[in-house]
Length: 487
Image (tube, rainbow, N blue to C red; front, side, top):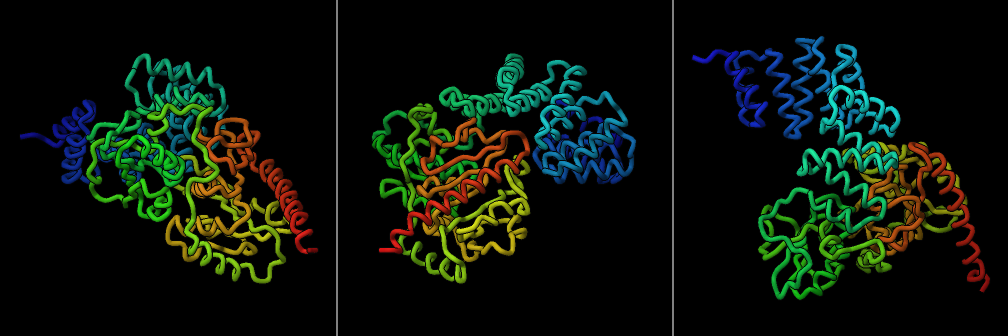
């Protein structure tokens, strides 16, 4: 009869062989008999983290550490789980504890490098990763993290060397291909970037569409990532329709009404539990690859989505009530934060208390377009326009009533660009790949103007530049309106 130790050994063997489900099952068998078995708690937590269940992983590993607080490896793995959950400060504390117990613990060094990367402290991140690399040269996790940090620090040749070394040893390492894709895309090498970007996971069994004539076949275009990505790449749906097929666009319910404005050639469906019948498919973010899009031929009409006129009128009346008592001037909407669950939200969002330079600009009617958790920090002087928003069609109607949108990198900026509404985008030093580097315009959206951090974390410089530009914007609008008032 197998002992509890035999079951634990079997679980570890399953785990080492990559059979996570079998390993987790055996760990749970051990814990059912001995709930305070620290190794089973720790290793089940590791298995949960490998499945992406980081909150469950952190809870299990924390239980193991209450039983055995001087074990270095669980502290390192707890730090990794907390980092994946976005708890950067707690992750740093756990990793520091791990390294105090074992200064040569490479996992902890690598994870601490990742934490410093999240905090945009690239020199410190690289120092920790270099220490890890000396302990285990060529380790894939360390090479991947070094490549990503070097890329975001704009040391592209070194980043390419790290990622290239990883791919030399592991040619099918999807994360390395995707990291290299981002490095190429952000530098404007779009065609090479799209090729690497195809290493994203696939979820539909039907044949993928690669740009060939459809000849009457049904093609399913499906959203796979965030709301902003869907808006950005929906521009390709009318181009797909020209390939003489039946185009079905499968989207989130909150974007269904908005995306119907793409035109009658596109059948827009709300995403259901199963995909609509189709012959071929293409994820929206694979369409640039299918069309061979380069930097010089991005399809960028002034606007490719539109707000419903009746909704525009309805929201115009609501906005008029919200601005009662204001002195007049251009209407400007503000968004200062994104989804806190986004992997880079710490760097792309701005604390609301930093908005004072914008709020003090005279001659404007300023409104909050902020949604989500950050809405609670809305400055009292900033009227809220988001109450009553049902979906992106309502958001489009609100933006159509504004003269300018100022936002961090969120779906709102994509919506403004797709509608052709003037918008100013505030970007961190290491921007998302789609905004490229060092330019004040976007080849994707003609109505956008970009304001960039000159160094990591420097929002003060950005906000000073925006405040100065906003003051000129208000003055220019006032000068334009003056002759009209006289006549």
